[in-house]
Image 1 (cartoon, rainbow, N blue to C red):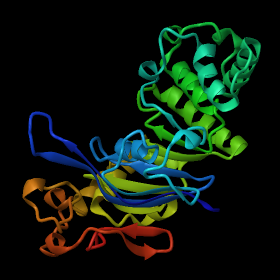
Image 2 (tube, rainbow, N blue to C red):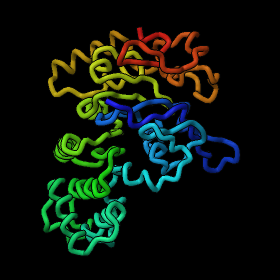
Image 3 (cartoon, rainbow, N blue to C red):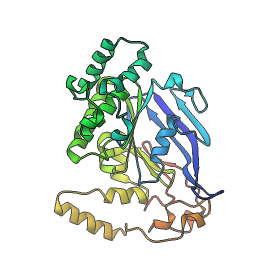
Length: 324
């Protein structure tokens, strides 16, 4: 596989509301690559920087520093019009991203106009119907408004809109987190089918590690704006090296009560419960951002520059202790 997306040392900070000089570091020297045709899963708790990273790659948010490359072309400061057809996003809340005043075919037709130029009304409706069929909706949806659909159906419309420009790369920004569990499985399976048929590349963002592991080939774990672990699903599942990744793994629920009991016992034996600790703002710049919550922390974690270090061919982590 060839590389489609690369980001190098990406940084982004936001001003704290009500403060003149205080900022929050949403992205702190993030570097990663995404191969053409793969799904790269990005997981972490709320506020970890996942959405900011996805939107910065698409240049919907401008980075403070660092580089963004698409198929070898640097687009950090490029005019994005030629790339908007190649890069799209599926939003977390479809109800908020669909124009309530437009009928479904009109919403999809906006993308068709961008991709193909001036089309007749008949052509727009025909192509819109084809895209709706791809996402499991019938022609009867064409003339209805978004409010007439359930959340899962609205997400299908949002996906059809994203597909209307024939993209190569799609940022899936928590596309199932607002849906019922039954709809989640349907949308995830549909995304997999679309990827197989169209050769799509995904950055799949979620706070749910079990969902990310189901759909992704490789995973990146984010914490406090930093990428703390990257690896194949198999490596992460078997040899999670960062304590934060291991906490996320332990949080995955199991329906089997016996497995759940074994997980609880193992968690207690390994002391994976987080510790209270010093405020992140008081830590030195060289400290691991997870230090305040980590039971494995040592003095070395305060002086260790938390950069990704290779553990194996498909695995890297910032943890100086390797969670041993």
